[in-house]
Image 1: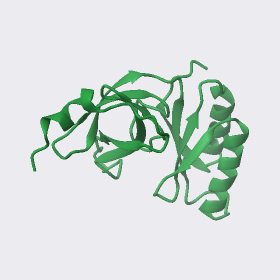
Image 2: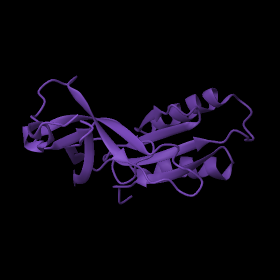
Image 3: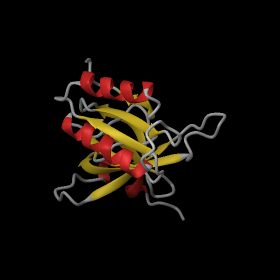
Length: 174
């Protein structure tokens, strides 16, 4: 089906005045030789700011280079989806991903270990999103929260073979 030109033109995407008026922005992912990430696209919730600009409303699991509250530009594709074009304005938030190790010295079920990590992250002022994958989480670090304590927590867990972590988008200078 052909998409009308008015839907493809980002200037026709009006700003949202309702907080529940969210859209999905789709990002293309590059898989490595091992097939990671386990998808070719990821979508993030966003609020339209008008003129093809959108503020991201959740934390990515696989996309790199963007974080919660960043403003991105997107266009409407032939498939009628909104596709990421570029980062328009960084919010100052940072994103870190954590994979809980299945075989670890901590013998509690993964769900219990994730809950403990979530509580620790929340005490530091960060938020935490669970993935559809049972041992993958994404952590949002707001701009006013220092990165050092979270890095120390994550590094200690990595050294203790509790998890691995990856810095997906770091806006903090420290």
